[in-house]
Amino acid sequence: MAATGAGGTNGGGAMRGAARWDERSRFLVAPAALVVLWAGFSLFNPYFFGLSNFLNVAGQFSLLLIVSLGEMIVIVARGFDISVGAVAALASVAAALAVNAVGPWGLLAAPLAGLACGMTNGLLVAYGRVQPIISTIGMLSFARGLALWLGGNEQAVMLTRSDGSLQFAYRSFAGVPLPFFAALAAALAAALLLYRTRLGRRIYMVGSNPGSAELVGVPVRATVAASYALCGLAAGSAGALYLSRASAGLSTEGAGLELQAIASAVIGGTALTGGVGNPAAVVAGAFFIQSLFNGLNMSGASPFAANLAMGGVIAVAGLLDFALRRMTGTGNPATGGGSP
Image (tube, rainbow, N blue to C red; front, side, top):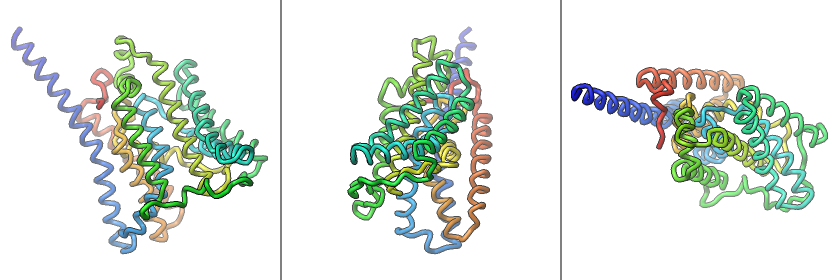
């Protein structure tokens, strides 16, 4: 009996060690890929590896990072949201109309619109038992159509009452674009939420093993719904950045943003099976995706090359996720996926 107990203890320790190795290896992928990417592009274009280009990428990736953080939270909870691009566009239109009606405070309509869309997705998935792909595809179509309808079937809703205070996307502090600081603040907020709050711990528990989480009293459905609401809030906040960049609500913007966000999250180590995610690694993942687009653009590559590269990145990220789970055995729901 004693031998059996020791074996069980050793087996449990080995399983936990494998899970920890899985998490560490996941979160190193994005930084390593980022170093290789910048080194590679710098060999062909000396201007790529420069402070001005770094600041350019830092300013551009902020919107993608904010959306990717929301996507990461949903994926950690064993879901995904492919409506974020359309929701961001709808949020920008709603904010443009609100700013034109009440002034700069109308910008708050963007995150509120995103939150409403996220809550709707959450209720459908968690309480209506609708599959995430069905719910979020429906929201994608609804948000895109509503954005066009609110904008009078125009691609842009121009600001008519802007006094310049909303153009923060083009401002900087110490030479660094303000959106970069906003994106880092969003990453810090996501980390505090996931690591320091009850909701964050519940999201990891539900993602690791929803059955076990329910047995210990975790409100699984409410937690899943909350994760979608947070994702919608992030998409709505991105809509505010769209508005600031263009001084207009963009009803047709955001196409492909959902794929970039999912790729950023997965490259950043977020497990597609749920239960594993790290905001800091997602920062590196989003910076990698934006750097890839920037490098291809500076190299004079065809715009279609970016789509080809994105498809390849998503495929490789998925294969890497599968390989890591296969090597460590963390793909089995019974073992969990790891938490902070």
